[in-house]
Amino acid sequence: MVFICLLLFAALLPCLGHSASINVGIVNGTEAEPHSRPYMVSLQENGKHECGGFLVSENFVMSAAHCWKNGVNLTVVIGAHDLDNYNYFRIPVKFYHVYPGYRRLKNDIMLLQLEKPVQRSRTVEWIAIPKTNKDVEANTICSVAGWGKIAFEGPYSSRLLEADVSVIETETCKRDWGNYFSESNMMCAGSGRGFCQGDSGGPLVCNNIAVGIVSFFENGNCDKPTVPNVYAKISQFLPWIKEIINDLQ
Image 1 (tube, one colour):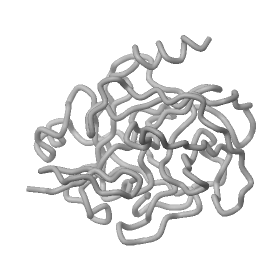
Image 2: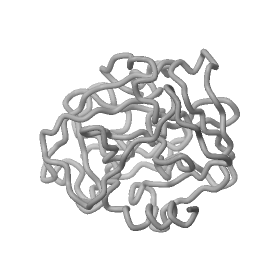
Image 3: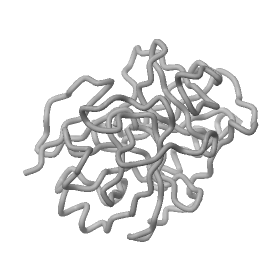
């Protein structure tokens, strides 16, 4: 049995038969072209990177629900490439919309309502999400990016890294993850590249559309995983997403 543990802000939660890591860095990836992913944001606590996220409108960032603990104030950093450069903007979070059905690995999605709308620029832009509840075909080449660790025992990356990953068949995900995988609201991808601690909440991007949210991976083994990385499937949550965003309009 593969053991994975859910990591929340670097704190290890009790292990499950399969466990997942929160605060998941890009492994076997390369540095992204600066500002080629202007939708990417860094979620920070007290000036320290904790998770990734991505702009889906001028007022909202999407991320993984496990990236926030009640009572913690996160700051959204937009327009960044090198977090050590400080050439970016910080925006406080006005409200945390956690999906009502979130339970550890399940329904791992939240929307962060920003204190003020962001302005489009060369370094700041939001990304499209699916319009219908349609699955991405297996073997589709997608990409993932983040400022997380480059190896499980390695350092965090100050510069945005990216990697191409291949969508894995649902049957393979179910076989490898068992009861921890939900066919209806999860998807997985792999190919020897993927995420690690600190990448949680970032988007899985296929054909310029954010289709998944970095959720969990095999505990202690993001370097050479034996099972695929798992993402929350955004299309499954469209009614809830539209309700939250439209209520602000």
